Length: 283
Image (cartoon, rainbow, N blue to C red; front, side):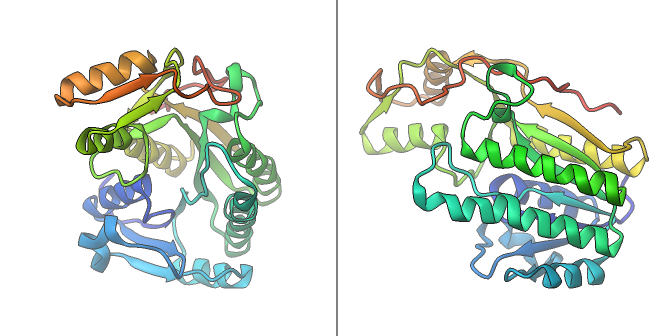
């Protein structure tokens, strides 16, 4: 499907969102972004002139006006506030982004007759593979939004696919994730303190994540979704963290001093990833 469609993206200046936006622009789609006054555009600098950015300052009325002007075929909702382990100062911005803004967006969609959404969740909503058991507060906010989402699905006929993402990676990733920390330690000649490393990790390349968003959109466009569907986005190849790090260092030809066991496992550490949802989006 290469015909032009008008789409609205939240979180389009982040790592995954910017990769999705690049992909949609390459397909010739008319892409609109909701951005904050302090959003940084480094990851979409080269295509910013091909986008329409709408600055959002906080009001539900403002979001409705944006939706009314844009009239998107679909909303890709990727905006979120992430912390693997929160501190008290994270609570307000996390709830504001992951719940308040997300519900404001849904309410604006309902008011303006926009009926399709690809939502973003996390595999961390399913500690030990349970139907619901959050690994952290971030995961709990994602589940809370799904509960709120159900009202709009049932009362306003909004059809949604939620993609629950595992760890992601790819080129030009500015996030302080594991791979960038390893490269940083190698470049600085510093030791990197790690847990014992027996937990399994599952890394998905950002290109595969973007393809999952596109496949979800096509399923919604084709009218194959009635309500709310959920899919996990994983590589299907879990590997022990210790083995993954050693392979990465070897493949990248890095010299890094890893202090295994210098840090304790996180509370509710995920040792083997599992979710109750299918990982393949039907074509």
